[in-house]
Image (cartoon, rainbow, N blue to C red; front, side, top):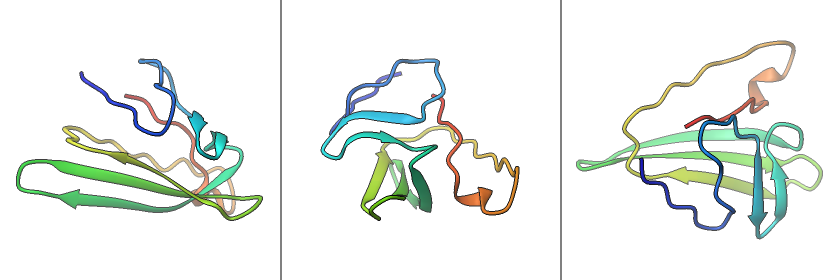
Length: 93
């Protein structure tokens, strides 16, 4: 798999991702410091793009991750309590 990282430090393969380092906002902890605000799936004729949008809880700053040329996607809802629908648990690729 070929992956390009623009605006953040590359992730290591085979690990559950919850932190984005080296961003213009500094280090962003998607699990502990952010709420998921939207998931957008854009279906093109040649490729699929997915955008995960977040809001940093302490100041409301928006943060998003965009994935181009997506070939496979699995999303699971892990509900462990009230409001857990906005909690990001991990990303693995």
